[in-house]
Each structure stands twice: as C-alpha cells, then as structure tokens.
Amino acid sequence: MKRVMIIALLGVLLCVGASVTVDQAFAQAVPTAPPAATSSVPTSTPAAPNSKALPNGTLILLQKNQAIALPPNKQPIALKPEQFGAQASGDYRFGVRYTHATADPNSPSNLLFVDNTSGQTKPIPGGTNLGAPGVTWKRDGSGVAVFDQQPAPNAPNAGAILYYDVASGQSQVLIAPPAPNQTATPIGWSPSGRYLIYVAGGAGVEGAGAPSLKVFLYDATTKQSTALPADATGFVAWDRASTGFFAQKGDIASGTSGFVYFGIAAPTTPKALTPAKTLDFLIDVSPDNKQIVVSSSATGTGAAAVNLYTMNFDGSNRAAITTLKITDQSITALVWGADGIYYSLSGKSDSTTWRIGADGKNAQQIAVGTLLAIVGN
Image (cartoon, rainbow, N blue to C red; front, side, top):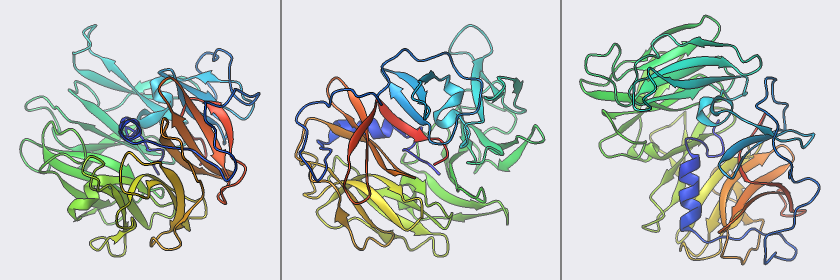
C-alpha cells in the first residue's frame, strides 16, 4: 500500500514539511532542541548494498541524500535505487534499474528487472528506448506496471501501461492508451493486487494532480475500468484490506488540505475526513485496518503547530496523541507500524525518526534520517 508517502511521494512529503511548521510531541516534556543520539541511532558508515532479503521491521531511511536500510540489528546498509522507493517491490525482494542506451544521461532509458536477493538482472520486455519511464510495483512483488510519460513518436505501445509478470518474465498491455497523444499512468496497486488506480491525460503530464487528467479504478479480475470523481486524483494510499483508498483534497497553499476516503463499494461518493478549519497533511492506516493517523494543524493555518491525531475511517473519534508546541521542525513522514506510530522530524540541518504509542505515550527517537518505509509493514 503506499506507503510512506509514499513514494514517488517523498518529494511531496518534503514539500509539505517545508511549508508547514510542526512539533513532535509527546504527553511529556516537549524537546526544544534536536534530541541527542542514543545507542539505537546508527552512527557508523553504512555497509555496501546488500544482496540478501531485508528482514521484516527494517527501517528504510534517507540520511543526507543516501538511502539506507536499518535492520533490527541496527547495522545500516547502503541501498541502490532499485532497493527502495518506487523502484523496489513492496516486499523489497525485487526492483527495477534504469539504464541509458548511451553514456549520455539524456539518451533513452532501458529497464532491467533486478532480483535484490541475488543481484541477478534481466531486461524487461517492452522496457527499452523509453523517454521518461516509471514503474508501480504490486505489494507482493509478483508484477510491476511500466509506463513512459514521454514516449517517442510511433513507439510501440506509446501511452499504454505495460504489466511485467515476474514469474513468467513476460510483459503485456494492461491499460491501452486513452487516446492519441495521451498516456495512462499507474498510481497505486491495492494490497491485494486486484485494483489499480491510474490517471489518463495528455502526454508529458507531471503527476496525478496535473490539469485535464482523469482518474480511473482498474479491476484486474473483471478487466474493467471505472471513472472516479476528480478528488481521486489526489490518491495517497490504500487501506490494508483493499476495500478503499484515501485521497488528499485541496492544497496547503490555499489552506484547504484534507483527506477523503473512497470505498470500493461506492467509489463515487467519498467520505470527507478532515474537519472544518483544519489542515491535514500526512496519513497512514493502523495494522488492524480500523483507524488512521494524520498529521494536522487544528487551527487550519500552515504557521500553527502540527500534531498527530487518530480517528476512525469515517472521521469519528478524532483524538490528538501529541501536544506539540515546536514550530522550527516539520513532520515529513508518517507510518503506523506494528509496534507504534513512526514519524520523522526535519529541521534546518537535521532529520530524525521517532516512534510513539497509539495512545500518545513512550515517544522516543529511534534513528537519524527521514523514514521512507518499514519492511513488512
């Protein structure tokens, strides 16, 4: 599902963090300076990129522009692009490596399937001579959607979404081009792998919120696509049961950032989750799929302190779990893990990752860097 927001969503999160003031707090004393490092915080140079599967509970972090894995043994491992973020499968076993046809970085791209446990690679059929490629993995690593935002004129399958099946090593057209000179762009697979959110619009569009885009829900079982309301272009994350998804409505600049929930049973009638005069920025789902957590400014202004709130899927029982006052740090990541709620704080010169109980107790710093994801979560 997502998840920390992401992905491909990391840039969005950092922009959000830069535009809002934030605190990170706990029910106890609020820190007024970056917390001191502890034994649980990695301080050693990361080891070389790993060639083994990452164990569940491993934190994927960004430290000074270097992605690392922090396994339970606290020994950091430097990661290659195909081992994290959008290029890695949801279980981190596999990845897609981008290469260039020539030494010129502006030359067409070719895509390689990478087995991250062995390091073995092989070409992805249909993944050659691409202008601006991208991939969207299924969470279980069984396959990946491939697209090209800037296909060459008359290129095979220009504008289509291809699906590469890991087991067979073959690719096929999953979503046909919407119309001449238009592209289909995959945004997010449901955890079950049955549904795919995608957008369709003019070639060269730069994201789900670009003008003239239309958003669709593709059902891999029925092979049918259903048009969704415009608000769905702000897709953020699926719930854990694949019964619905969350989208961000509005924007921070205009003071209208909030979340809506689209249930698969009634996708054209989303439920608004954000109260009036409130700004919600980041969101994630509890492991039992019963609650959500958001980072939010209750005053509805980006200059106010931001705290964490839990609530039900319908927006009821919204309750603060932090009481922060700090305004010189931003919350730039949010993940509800198996053992607590994780969040990252970014200031002018540093970024740290914390964990807090769903009841707002026992907050503690656990790593240096911005959290991207948690393996197995």
